[in-house]
Image (cartoon, rainbow, N blue to C red; front, top):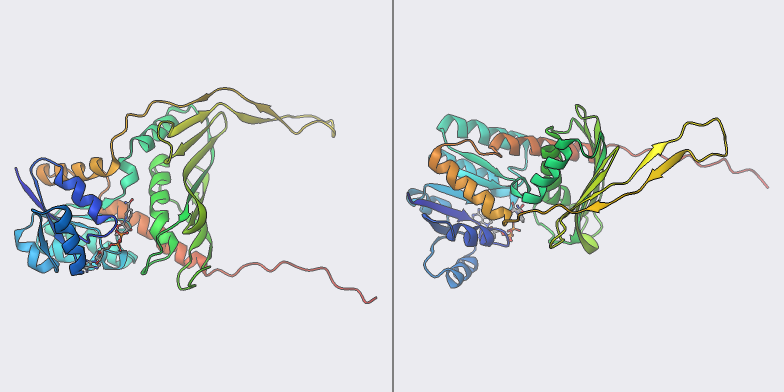
Length: 339
Ligand SMILES: NC(=O)c1ccc[n+]([C@@H]2O[C@H](COP(=O)([O-])OP(=O)(O)OC[C@H]3O[C@@H](n4cnc5c(N)ncnc54)[C@H](O)[C@@H]3O)[C@@H](O)[C@H]2O)c1
């Protein structure tokens, strides 16, 4: 069975989709990009690929599309494809407003087409392993989760660093905890350009799990960091996406409260033990994700990350916009006394 899939947006990420999809059996790829220079580049790398500058011209020859244009264009492009009755895989974030994301989910259901969110990390074997560890109870009760996604990053022209990078962290943490956060607080700053924040810290509250998560995202950091730390009462686990062969490490360390009436006694005792790095059979997550999309198109199966899941993440992102304008609390200074 041949699937004709159009990748909309042949930029940094869309070019990876084209490479991956072109390698899948029975998939014929087209490229749609508004910038003719990008189409020339697509033809240079993939000489056989069909190219179009506008989605409408390509749609009659397509069974599905992957939307890898900038976030502000996601909903209009996706809705166009949905109305034409073809399946859509949309890069994160699904849309830039809750209303747009809701409309996409609604229209996909009405038209009976597959709508999938490109939450790549939910197709990542290291994240699956981390979830297996969390679910096994090995870490004990989860106390908190901390994530960092830092870099001298690719500044985006139509969204801030939270909408660009935090969808990954929101998707990973909510996947680990089987829950979407109920509340969020944000500290964000636009250091360069000032139009959009480029450095941000998020706090998310997961009410059912009784867990707080802390996420640091930045386009303005000297080091590349891609890290998720899950701190449990018994053990702690760290997922370092930049490690070649030790993506997951489980630390058998912890702190126990010491009950004592002795005011000079230590308040806690420390446990230290082995650091274990379980084997993770790794396959490129984008290949796993795009293969799953093709399988869903062929079988009618509901995607593991359906449009509704993308909508959940957009709801959290929209809440961060509201949280970012909350007033800060002034620090009270001591009264000056006359000398
Ligand atoms: N899942 C991941 O790990 C991951 C990683 C990076 C980027 N992304 C996502 O991929 C998407 C693209 O990001 P990028 O970094 O590749 O951006 P980019 O700017 O490098 O590329 C975007 C491309 O889309 C084209 N384009 C813009 N509007 C268009 C339209 N209306 N029709 C057709 N083409 C259009 C542009 O000409 C450009 O070539 C974003 O949604 C981003 O969040 C996901």
